[in-house]
Amino acid sequence: MARLTVIKVGGKIVEESESLQSLLDRFARIEGFKLLVHGGGRSATRLAEQLQIPQQMIDGRRVTDAETLRVVTMVYGGLVNKQIVASLQARGINALGLTGADLNVMRSHRRPPKLVKTGDFAGQQVDYGFVGDVDSVNADILARLIADGVVPVMAPLTHDGAGSMLNTNADTIAGETAKALAPHFDVTLMYCFEKKGVLLNPDDDESVIPSIRSDEFPALVQQGVVSGGMLPKLENSFAAIAAGVCQVVITRADAIDNSESGTRLSR
Image (cartoon, rainbow, N blue to C red; front, side, top):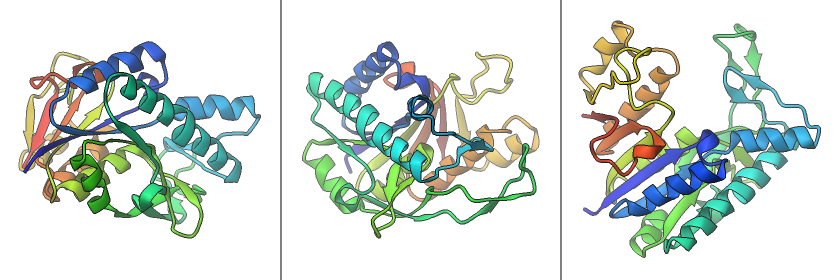
């Protein structure tokens, strides 16, 4: 099968012009089929503040009321997504910006209230509002677009099939997309963040663990090497591998075109 690289990138990398252009230069150099998933949370927060719409973050997740949903739809599906698409077109890449509602690419249901386990709201049931948990991915139509030379650029928005958009975590979008496309392509899923990879010592940025197999993962958790926010990221990554994704790479955005960089997770 043909190779497909699914890259998720977020934070200031996609929201500051210089870092975005550098990222897209590197993305353009990646060989084979590719797909980009982006965030844009800081831009959404700034616009909400300008519109005087209060924002609430609980356990690292945005509470998405009706007004905030309008903001994230404008920012994720509009401003950030179309800036990326236009910049890729300037590099000769035939990109297509998509939310989950476009072509019914990704459908979700509204997340029910959840018990918060940490932070100021620990022990409370919290309604996150218009936040989506993914139910299905239209992999066939994505695969046809990709095979025809289109590069999808996916915003972190889904829909419920009943007329409502839903704010959806970009890591989840990337993971579910990669899993759904695994029967069609040899998929590499790449998560970009601020560190060079999974670190053996969190205080030493050079202590990158080059590879982790699924059978090695439990011991790293037990030893405390993998903890905090990295734990759910790796759990989701190994779930993707179990679902047929060939490998997951965790690395910095400035190394996505370097086949030797980061931490590689495999079966």
